[in-house]
Structures are given as structure tokens and as C-alpha cells.
Length: 525
Image 1 (cartoon, rainbow, N blue to C red):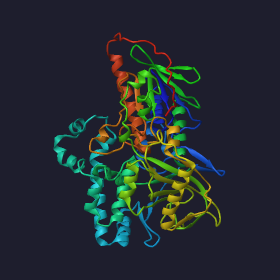
Image 2 (cartoon, rainbow, N blue to C red):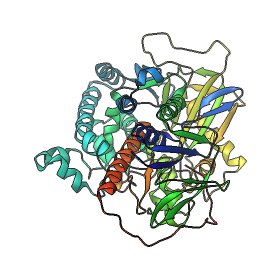
Image 3 (cartoon, rainbow, N blue to C red):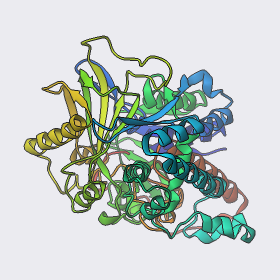
Image 4 (cartoon, rainbow, N blue to C red):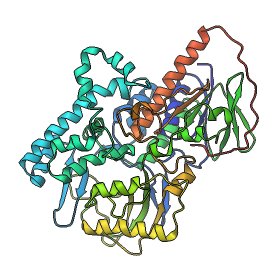
């Protein structure tokens, strides 16, 4: 592949595209404004301890094995992982104890039965089977397939004989109501409704199709030595070994064009990086709002503010804990889930939030003794509460940050977990996420998956500007670490096809000229 490629942003999607294109012979340069690779998959230093700063749940290992194999490498040689026995531990209050879900399906069925009764166990088994059916229908044509603007091309690829299976995806049914068909216990409806938040959506507005996320997690959750930032570093190493160049601490301010297509990028330093292909590994909103120049602004549609996904309040804490025995992944639920999402829809942080806690120093084994820090020692926690994506219009005052911290600790305390006070931590609000990822308002998942058509409205790899492509968790197929990698695979595959098509077509003269530097500058994604 004789092409010069500039990748804006060193997130999971951009690094995947860079490695795959470099392996095909392209001259690839990755340009990242921050001093680290990984985008959201970073590390944060608190009280001398490094804490996972972004995603913590790793699933769909197959995707990364395929990426490394395509580059002539073995995933296991670069990333150390072990399978979690306990997928997650769930709490509602101090009195009712907790519910574990397991990698072993029958163990989960038994656990649900002990927690909520025999009917609940049968309901869980039926739910798991339905989630598996939905995943099986969508895995190849949607997750691994090309981007389509409507369901029709995907249905054509699947064949009309599979119409019953397509309807079984339940795109027109609401997720919350569909869960009510399986679970009469509101706690279980709440537990499995939470999977909608994995792609930044409300379980009250998401389609039942998103139940497939539960199956993806049930297939295996893996713990990575060094966290998901270690995965990003491994992808960067993979790309450089294929010949790509990864530069950090350099911000792109404009996508340059010549003769109606991309010709390179301009850095904040004034340096020009010539490129035939430019890949934006960031939220498409950064393009649509003109942060990379006028030509790129016209390349993608803007995401309307009401269509944004959830943001989050994230505490990175180094603290002592007491009470509830933590696993690696833990969820502490609010007493009124509907009120929580009404608060967010109204632009407020939840008065009583559901709280996710990643206990980084703890294992996820059921039978082995828990990997508990030494008596009196502090442990590393990442704590997440869903929040509105209002970081571009709302300033989070010290008083509001303190109020949110108190609300988070109140939920934990009600469920039996106590953190030492004062809490040694750093807090990221939607305003802070907007600072890292401009033009998003702090939305961490791109467009929300609300309604049957939302998944088809996500930005695909191709844009209106020839030579400019998109990748990352805000693009097709969905949000999340494996989905960002799938988007990187799709972008690389699409670029390879387009370049092959250009070589076999006649050259044509296109109107246009070299753009000038835009007065609007911004950060890379």
C-alpha cells in the first residue's frame, strides 16, 4: 500500500488502524495531543499511586487476537490477561447482601435463584438465551460488517430467509419493558438495564437490542495486567513495529486539502504533515464544530446536543475501605433508578446515584481468597457515576463537586461500603471531560443509542471529504474498547478498498486548492 496516512489521536481505534495500515505497507504517522497513548485509556496519579483513568472492563478478546495476528504477532505475547470468575458484584443495600454474576452460566443461574427465587433463576436463563440470540444475529453483519445508514443493507446481506431472526433482535421494543418480561424483581430489571449505560444510554430509552451487551460480557471478562492502558501501549508498540511513527504531545489544528481531498494536517507548532489519508480518532463533533478547519467541518454532520450519550463523574481514589467485601468490578444501585435517569435527562447530576467501583488491586475469583490490601493499607479505586453531557455549558463549582462526592459516598454507605474521610482523590466532571475531548460536552460514548435507528446514525469510517476517515468509540459500530478496535479494523479495511479503487480509476481534475490555516484551533481526539 503506497500511501501516506496521518492519524489524529492515539486512542484504541486510531492505534488499531495505524497498526493494520502500516502492516499493509502504508507510511503511517499517529499524532496525539496528550503525552500518553490510549485516549480515555490512560493512567492517573493520585497520592503516588497510578490508577486506571478510563475503561476498566475488557471483553471480546477475539477482536484483539485478530488484530495482532493480522500484524504477524501473538496477542498473548504482548498483553497479560486472566479470565475473571466473577463478572461483577452487585449491591442494593447493606441488609440484602450482594449478587455475583459469573463466567460460568450455571453458577450465575444458581446465584440469581438464591438471591431472588426460582422464578428469577428461570427468568435469568431465558434472558441470557435471548441476549445470546440477538448477539448471534448481529455479530457478523453489524459488529464486523460495513457501516450502513439504514438497516436495509444489513438485512440484504443477512438474507430475507433470516427475517424472523431480525425481528427477534427487537429493535422496536424498549429495553426496560423487555426486561420486565423476564424479571419481576425490580432489582434484577435494574441490574440488566444497566447494560444500556455501557454505550452511554438510558435503559428507559434504549432498544431491547442492547440486551446483547449482557451476552458479550457473559462470554468472558478479562483482567489485564497494567489495566487497559497497557493494552493501548501494546497496540502502539505493535504499530511501531509495523513501521508506524507515534508522536505524542503534538496537537493537530487543521485538516489540509488540495484539489478537493485531504493533503495532510497542520500542527499547532506550524509543522505540516503531508498525507494522502487522514484518520480522525476522536468524537466526530470535533470535526463538525470546525476544530480541525472549515473543510473538515463540512465532512460530517454535527451530533445534536439532545442526542449526546451520557457523561460521567469519575473519582480516582487512593483510600482505605471498610465493610462490603469488594470484587474487581462492583455496582452499588440507587433505590430509584427512574428518578436517577430523570435527573440526568433534566441536566442534573443524580441526587441518589448508582455507583460503579473498580477495585483495581482486587482479583475477581470466587473460590480463592479475595486479594485484599494489607490491613490498614490504602487501595486504588476508580468510581463512576453517570451524569449529563453538559460540560460545555455548565461549570462545576467546588460546592457542586463536594455535593456530588457526598451523594456518591451516601450510596456506598447505604450498601455497606465505607471510604475513609477525607477521601484522597481526583474528580473528573463533564466539564473536565470536555477539556480533554473538546466539542463533546463530556459525552463519553458519542451518540446515545436511543430508538431503533440510533445505531445506524453513528458516524461511519467514510466522510464527505475524500481522504478523511473516522474511527473510535464514537463511531460505528458502538462505544467501548472492543468496539473502538472494530471501528479501527473497519476504517483500515475501507481505506484499503478505496485506495485500490483509486488505482484502477481514471485520474480526474477536481476543483479546489490548498486550504489556509483556520482561525479555529482545537485538540486532537
